[in-house]
Image 1 (cartoon, rainbow, N blue to C red):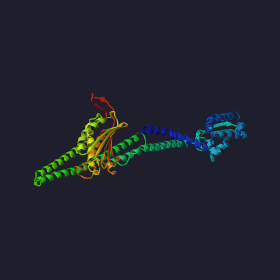
Image 2 (image 1 turned 135 degrees about the horizontal axis):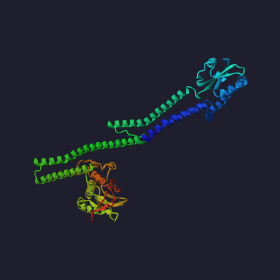
Image 3 (image 1 turned 90 degrees about the vertical axis):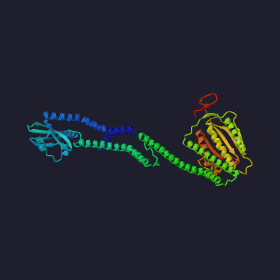
Image 4 (image 1 turned 120 degrees about the horizontal axis):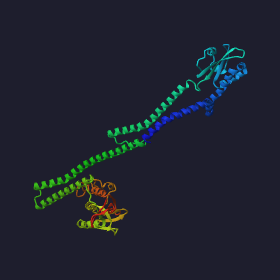
Amino acid sequence: MSIRVKLYMSYLAMVFVPFILMITFMVFIFFAGGIEDIRQYFDKEHNEPYRQALVYGELSYVLQNDTGKLEDEAYLNDIQKRLGELWAGHVISKNGVVIAVAPFLEEAAPGEDWQKLLDQPPAKVTFRKYHFETFKTVFNYPDGSTGTMVLFRRNDTVPIYWRPVSAAFSLTFIGLTSLLLTYFVSRSIIKPIKRLEAAALQIKDGDLSHKVVATTKGEIGQLSNAFEDMRVRLKHSIDQSLQYDENRKMLLSHISHDLKTPISAIKGYVEGIMDGIANTDEKRRRYMETIYRKATDMDQLIDELFLFSKLDLHKVAFDFKEIDITRYLEHFLEEQRFDLDKSGVALHYSSSDAKPLLIAADPDKLSRVLTNILNNCVKYMGDNTGSDSQDIKVSVKEQGAFILVEIEDTGPGIEEDDLPYIFDRFYRAEQSRNLETGGSGLGLAIVKQIIEGHGGIVWAENAEHGGARFCLKLPQSVAAKTVDVHEQHTDY
């Protein structure tokens, strides 16, 4: 519920709730007083003036025309009874002496000095916490005696204390209702805000581990969700920064180690030449070839580090083009076959589809991926001295909306413990730091970065015969616009 709706409802409740509670309280009072039908009570109150007029009219007629009835005990009792039902009564005197007091008055004011009230009747008097009006009438009895009648009639239908009590009661109800509604409404607003304040202080202190839970809906709930999104993004950003720092430290550590090894070797061979150890042309030629090879390894390592750094920071621009992966692999592998034959490795290629399989790819980056995987296969097959032949099989096939490229070798395979990590940066299944055997640990990490940049996935597994199998899964292309008759770019 929004804050605006809560405030509107609280305002309406402050108006109607006290009114409803007062009506409920009055109904309870009526039933506690034995009034089962409220309509009868109000009908009686409504008809009371009419009944009073009948009795007062009759009494006025008797006082003017037939005062002898006032000495008739039966009539006097009857008129007093009817007056008592109407909350009225009279005091009658003869020759200044009180001769009759209505039972209603004696019950309403026991011990009252009626003679005094008869002689000097006030305009108003209070009996049983009700205001009564007085009416004095002087008449003559049939025998010539002087008579006086003072009529006491209830002025208000409620006790004199009822009005201030009802006013105080109403104000109390209104005040309590306002306080309670204000408390609950403010509590429903302030409590979530306090939680947000505590969360903000935690974020300010750098503690991003506590989740901000939206305990209410409306504006505060939306604000809580926004705080939670901010916390998650901040935490992700900080975690990413920490990971980047860790990666930089690891990168520096590996760079220093991997560069120091060939540099130390170069220094050693140069010192050998300078000290005259290489004292023949054959030795000097062999030393120079080794120095050149080490320098080439260093240059390759620097290139890989530079490329991986750019890929990791997403600073490499991909020039996506629509290519037929079957024809691309056919031409690429044909170029690689000559070099692999010199290394004693047989390269085989097969495609399960005769139709073109189109993907959106950067040909240069894809070439780097395939080269790194082939080099990895050749490197580790060279350690498998027990194998009769060294073969690499490359196959491509359509798999739903993707193209699957599999590169399988006949090497020793990959240890199960190493499979989840071989695409991590600087991870070597062969823990040797020799670049000729263990590698730099960046080749497959670069493969993963490039394939994910193409929107695909890459993984490795062991083949049935024990060799390693690398799987590249790339999405098929949907042509967006033809640039020329030979090449199409895709909105990828």
